Image (cartoon, rainbow, N blue to C red; front, side, top):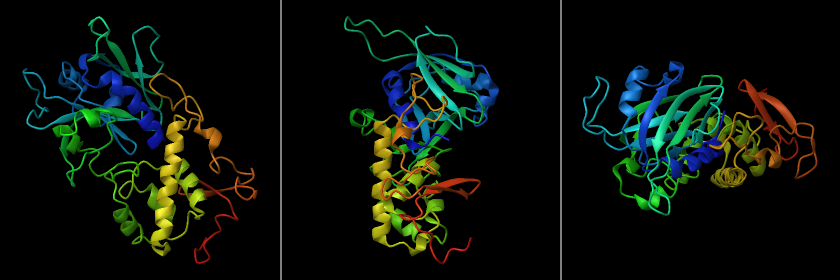
Length: 332
């Protein structure tokens, strides 16, 4: 599944096109893409058409677009005009959001199509032409939904919104989060992420540290790829009990997580096939810099020992047997 860097690449691509844009038209081509929406396709289209998108926001792997209050019109039975709303996009395993000007063929697995009018103008003051936003999903595990937003527990900004953070730091939507995302912990690149809170929570867990990194209720945005890379950087075995790690161990691990995520963002994310792409359909290339994930049999970049791949939670973990020795007390 896409992890934080892949979703952030999509968010950053959407930001200039959708921030302040007005939704002109909505086509739901496959209702399976609305599994998390409270209503049928007609309701989704009715509630979204004519709305203005405030920004593109991300927390961890989750992406949403806050909506300005609906214009005066007859409300549907599922609409709650007294509460702020957002268009939430769950990419699932194969979801993509692509932008175009209507000058290319429809994507093969197009599920939802939005036509939006960007807020910007050309040099002569002429409004920019409309943009098409395609939600594409081969496996149909992703979805879009209009969701009610709730205040953040800590009162801080709900997620990262790029340059819009600086333009609208006090906007009400900044401190509101879709209810579908509210249970997700902050990610390590979030300015409001609390290192001490993460360390305290981790040191109460008897499970292996990789399980903690994958627990979206503790820290978000980290999946299998970036967990393996970060644990290699910190020289920690994935099964080391989190409760036995020192505060220094966990601070080093957080530093490695941030470094790995930062490098992945520089490279546009990790793509092993054509599924994980940016809004222009281009793949990232961080896979060329992976130290251990998918590198089984190749020499460790640090010590030269062949990397091993081992079964882990119905998936795999990759590590260096020398740099990341198995914890002695862990039963296999």
